Image (tube, rainbow, N blue to C red; front, side, top):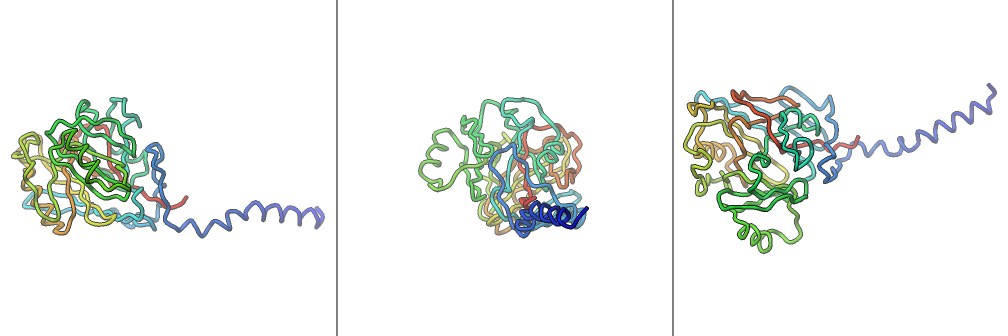
Length: 299
């Protein structure tokens, strides 16, 4: 093979690789994930898992820990993200109409979640609630029995206590920031902590509030900072926390937190890190949806 041919081959290879060489510095920059719920997060970096309890890359930092309260195991996941698009939701089978329930770990792995928590089991309560998933509104049927949580496009939490359609509409029209969009919403509750203080006004027997049960909550700590808090429990209500005790526990953990919101507990409780449940659950069941945190590093 003569030198001219070799030179042409070298030039062709250089031109082929040039786009990669030019774009490679951007790989370390924080990205933004598409709103579409069918688009998962970026694939976690193997080297991002610093230990069994920590993940870190340029766009997300997650740590997990266990505390013993009395004799009760509790689990806390702290999350810091770089972009609001990294707090996301996933439905079982990716469809609102599909009533199939699946394991939380399966959903978490499907969407490349770094950390995840069960949602509000909206497919079980099929006739009530305000359901928005990844910017798409599916249902607005609030009956005044539950608090609604809304997460906007900046990742901030908003709520309507004991929401009816009327009170929800009034909030969205008059109090919700005009330049914001509801990205995800949940109808379960109640709201447990507001501005660092336990909030008990909407704790009712609807939530089996007085019984000791396995509980789980999602918390906004600050701008793009969140936590998942879980306490173990048993199905016979002999072990766990009442909702009042759970709200007090979260307020003690995070005295400066903005909002803590109770999610579906009991057998629906799922707190996932690296596709594994980090707690025990004696009556675990399949569920319909998760809230998760994903990496947005550019692949």
